[in-house]
Length: 193
Ligand code: ATP
Image (cartoon, rainbow, N blue to C red):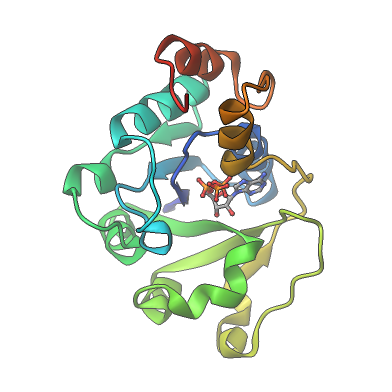
């Protein structure tokens, strides 16, 4: 049988416990074999925004998932050095597995903005993570894809990368919002200073 892979795209600037706890939760919830963390080189939805170099972001994800045999990180999007379109990533992984694209619920209503979004849903199911705990319904334009959209009941972890960056800028302590290995790396490299 084909393996079930979760593709977890993001900027991961930096990776935090919200990503990790949710990923661990859906691994069991949807009987996934593996979750592939996929840091974007240039996320199309955040293209104009400043972000840390892809190298630092990749290293932090590597540190964060170390020791979890169901988690891997891929540099597929980073290596391309262009805007990161999910559809190309899915095309790449489709050969080896059944795909589940993992997104936060804030993206669902805006999913039609994603490049070739219909094709994305042709290649993969969607797993939608809860972020704020608000009720999120399937928007009308996604009605025909209803069967491919799965809502997770992941625990709410109201941490975001932007909150962490803001804390760091204000010299606040971000301990426990990221794994200690990531916390140490941020300190050592004086990131987000
Ligand atoms: P930023 O605050 O900079 O916008 P972010 O915290 O949303 O970043 P991303 O790397 O953009 O982090 O997130 C990757 C994916 O993980 C997105 O689909 C996002 O919705 C989801 N995600 C991020 N934080 C959480 C969280 N705390 N709980 C569940 N899903 C999350």
